[in-house]
Length: 141
Image (tube, rainbow, N blue to C red; front, side, top):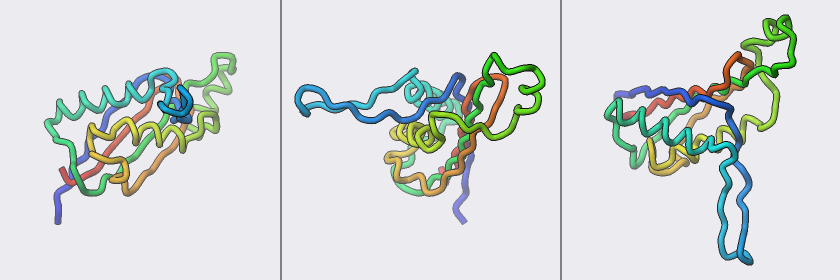
């Protein structure tokens, strides 16, 4: 059996989904915007976690990823509604699939060489008092 290791870290702030690529200069140059800097924050948190744990980037092999997106409850909700909704699934934009895609892209070159190495993905989006994203990776480091 191959030993597996879990790395987990948190990314503070509101999550945003992967944006659509933009084309400029007559189709010569494309780029993907990063609204709110979410992709950058995920990559930076991943680098810090990797350095603290002393794990190297996986050149090949499967990675399992778990993502929990905690959405901040709107300020105009009543105290009773906040108590009732805390921890329940949140259905909001950006959609969870686009958030997961942004995270997979952000961690490419940090924990794995290509995001196609993410062989299993579990993701959920819930209401919370403070916005943050919890990411856990399971791999044979």
